[in-house]
Length: 137
Image (cartoon, rainbow, N blue to C red; front, side, top):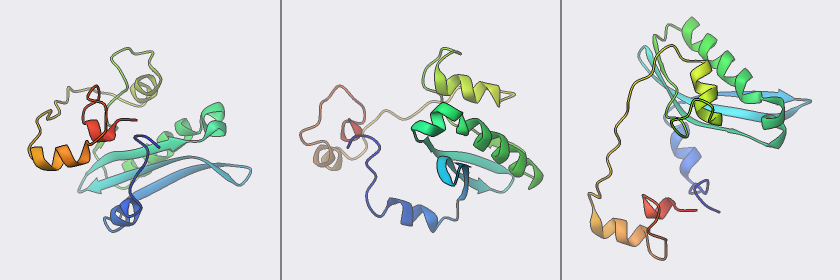
């Protein structure tokens, strides 16, 4: 299962927040999709995924291109593409996002456990080599 194992209620819960979703199709098959949230003139990337055909055909490029153009046309001034998967410009996700970006800023994430009891419950039988442990593959 791993990190991609969302609870059954997850997508129903985020639908209540009225996200924008964009998908790329090939021969009637969804091959790449992206979920965005908008607040005022800001948009935030939430979740993107492609299947094997989507990676092969680079469907995510079409999804990013359409999403950015659409959001811009809707008056969005700042689009947060989210983090990359490494510092190297050649790393897949980082490379893709740099191609659609005109700026980059450092983001600092909280690495502190605020509710130790709840964290311990969520992390039972998980390796401690991953943080947060309950999201370990």
